[in-house]
Amino acid sequence: MQTNTKLLIVLISLLFSKSLTAQTTKTTSGNPIVEGWYADPEGVILNKEFWVFPTFSAKYKDQVFLDAFSSKDMVNWTKYPRIIDTSAVKWANKAMWAPSIVKKDNKYFLFFSANDIQSSERKGFGANNPDKDDKIGGIGIGVASRPEGPYKDYLGKPLINQFYNKAQPIDQYVFQDKDKQYYIMYGGWGRCNIAKLNKDFTALVPYENGDLVKEITPKGYVEGPTMFIRKGKYYLMWSEGGWTNGTYKVAYGVSDNVFGPFEKKSTILVADEAVATGAGHHSVINIPNTDEWYIVYHRRPIPNLDRDHRVVCIDRMYFNEDDSIKDIKMTFEGVKKVKLK
Image (cartoon, rainbow, N blue to C red; front, side, top):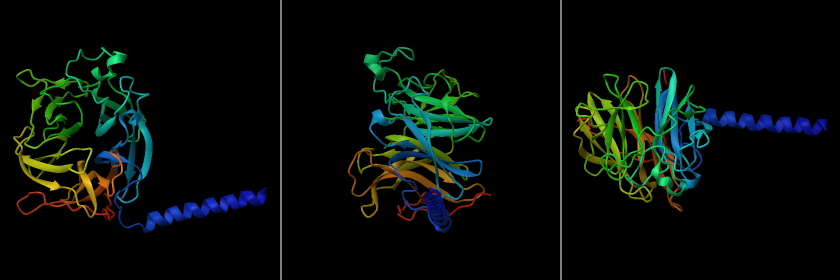
């Protein structure tokens, strides 16, 4: 018995040693950066660590939770499973996706979409008829004291559960402007809206004309908006094509303010038959106090055998001298180690 126990300890020690050696000797992230089917990744820096919050890519009925991943160097990643699920969000029953996270007042607010509602003929929250479960859903919020959760339902209902400007309430991205005002931009079905968030993220703040949202849809927009500021310019990026196939791609426009107009500049991330297809629904990471940029996105491996076979990848994003974004080259190598100061 003692011999078996000693042998087990030796085997565990060897496996642990090999794991440490692999992390030490690994020089690039590789693409995909993590194992498993994931999509719609939100890449951020929190507490001097890199974090990725993706959609679990599966049939809608199985998309009932979200995982998260962290890294100190963008190469070695740690998984945090089920940071939130439908047991914590009573109004959600399927299709939890497209997380967007914000740290505010030492709390972490995880915005997500749920239920994939399809009808604009709605009675609002509370009209949850089991026979008509497409009548409730939209964009909700989880809250936690740590990035890895666990998250609980912040509002007990969706923040946005109506169709404004014919935009399906999905694919949200939360953005803080230079004046510290937080905005939420979102929208499927080829429409993009932007709304002001109040200080505690419990409601939308009406604009001067009384509207809760403004439409900022650029030409070619399908879904998946994200935004960043560089050299005083506002870059709005979005996905085009069909998310279920290889036509998915990323385009962008530039404006002087958060409301646009955002005239399409170009398409910068497209299928590469030598690497992958269906690249899109991305986010962007900027290393603080540098002009070093990364794009975090999902793509479809070749051959692609299933609608939900998508993986999360990271590649460098570069700019031209005129501040336009260069076409992005997808790689299998991924990115080199990055240390945050």
